[in-house]
Image (cartoon, rainbow, N blue to C red; front, side, top):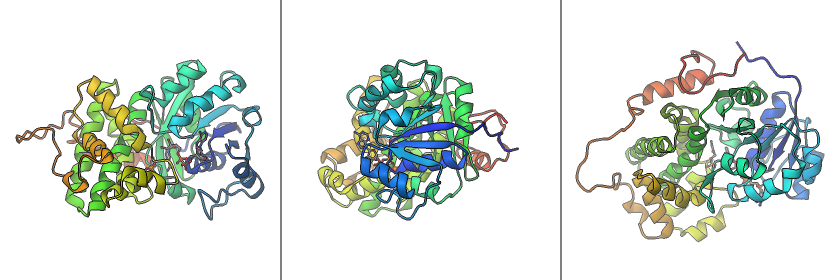
Length: 376
Ligand SMILES: NC(=O)C1=CN([C@@H]2O[C@H](COP(=O)(O)OP(=O)(O)OC[C@H]3O[C@@H](n4cnc5c(N)ncnc54)[C@H](O)[C@@H]3O)[C@@H](O)[C@H]2O)C=CC1
Ligand SMILES: O=C(CO)COP(=O)(O)O
């Protein structure tokens, strides 16, 4: 049964990069009237007048129900939901500017997959800090969501998490259409960390790809990477199942496999021998993983979580580990150790993958674990 649509919503999306723009299309194709706030007036003008965003989405025509402005005040007038897709390090300043303009009671949804470097906070924590709104009105949407595939309306799924399932349902209904299906859960920590951590594993994959290593190396890193992601997220209060759902394993697979991923691309350049500053210069888009490495490792050390792959990424970024030396170091111990899957998620990986697939296409989705469909 397809979920019942909400009455027509007026929503605002902050950020006119690739994800803000494509998510606006998802919402508009789900029936919402969308206003995008773009930092640059020329981007707002192009979106408004031609329904295109040529810098990020060449050749994509956007629905006419999307408009855009570079005035924060105008963008927020009458908003019933707010979605935020600016680079993570820019979130706090943008929230400070919009705080006095935000209509009361509006749910605020993070679409971002980074950690604030200065505080080590997740994006929903920054939102709660700055906006001082009820946690039940804050949500995060995450999953295997490569913007350029979704722009072409290739089917995919996501999960919307909020401490309030009411809020998660409200958002998931708006963010569902014929090619994009949103599920819900109440594990904000797991959903949010899934998106952050898979970026770091995707950088690792890019590095070994750039070196020229093959599928065994990459499969080892993906599999051990999922263990690191799960150990870390659980140490910070996540539910294990979330990491084997769309926001964990699902996004890990998409990002590690795709040349569209900016994190994967950044890693590949490092693996090919470019230094970090050269990679940053070459990338004209946000690769959140590069900024998340230090905060994630600081958080991992604080809770004694072992993250050998992320440690190696950090050393490659710092120039103290040669990319070609990366793959063999898949544990922190020199001695052979048991394959510690810690959370039996790996034993369930095949099952989890099948469930993610079934859920994405609406089959067998009420198994009562992990991501759930929005209430019909
Ligand atoms: N592109 C994708 O496939 C997906 C991206 N995300 C997440 O969405 C977030 C945004 O990423 P993208 O849109 O892909 O990045 P992007 O690099 O395509 O666009 C970033 C946008 O933010 C603007 N911007 C830069 N500095 C700013 C500032 N100080 N204040 C306000 N705006 C500023 C840029 O002008 C640009 O419009 C990231 O956290 C990313 O991890 C999540 C899922 C998918
Ligand atoms: O989060 C993403 C896909 O789900 C996008 O990944 P990149 O930021 O690496 O492009």
